[in-house]
Length: 315
Image (tube, rainbow, N blue to C red; front, side, top):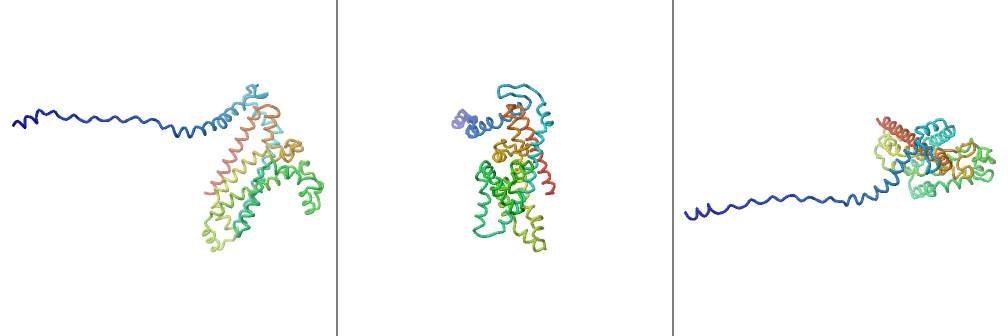
C-alpha cells in the first residue's frame, strides 16, 4: 500500500522542451563568385547600353555638350543619302557572305569530310589559318595584291581573261565591293568551314547509306538527309555571318586607309564606318548612338526572320 502511495506522489517527468530551429545564416559564397561577373557586365554592358539609348535622343558636340532632340536623329538617318549608301553597301556584302561565302565553306567541308589520310588535317589547318592573322593584316596584304600591274590578283585576272593588268580595284567604284568580297572570302571561308565540318562528322552515316540504297544520288542524299541533320549548325552559321557582315569595319579601313575605308564615291562605306564618322570624327555621339541602335534593330529583325524561315522549312 505504501509503495502505491509513493508512486502516486512521485512527481511526473517534465515534458522535453522542443528545440527551436536555428536560423541559417545566408550563404554569401555564390554571390561572391558572381560579383566579378555582375560588376563587369554592369560596367561594360548594361551601363553602356542604357547610356547609348539615352544619347540616341540627344544631339552632342563631344562628350560634355548635349541637347535633347527626340526622334530627330532617327528622322535624319531615314533621309540621309550617305547613310542609305552605307546601308546598301553593307547589305550587298551580307548577301555575298550568305550566298557565296557559306556555300564555298560547305563545299570545302564536304570535300574534307569525304577525304581520308594525313593530308586532311593539313588542308584543314591551311584553310583555317587566314583567320588567325586578323582583318588588319589581311587588308594590308590584299591592298598589295590588288596593286595595278604588279599585284598577283591583277596578273591572275589578266592571264585568265586578258584584261585587268592596269586595273585599280580599290580606285574603281564598281570594283571596290568585289575587292572587299574577295578579301573576305580568303579570310572567312575556312573559319565557317570548321563549323560545317564538325557538324558533318556527327551525321548518322547509316541514314546516308540507306538513302543511297534506295537509289538517291549524291545531291539528293545531301539535300534530304545530310542538310536536315545539320540544320541547327547551318542556322547558327548563317545568323553569325549576317551579324558579322553588318559589323564590317576593319577590312575596308585596312584596304583603303587613305579614304578611311570609304573608297571612291563611298563605294566601300559601311554602316559601322558611317557610325565612326558621325560619332567620333564629327563628334555627334547622339547620332552615332542612333546609328548603332538602328543597326541593332535591323540585325535583330533579320536574325528572327532567318530563324523563322528555318523553323518553317523544318516543319
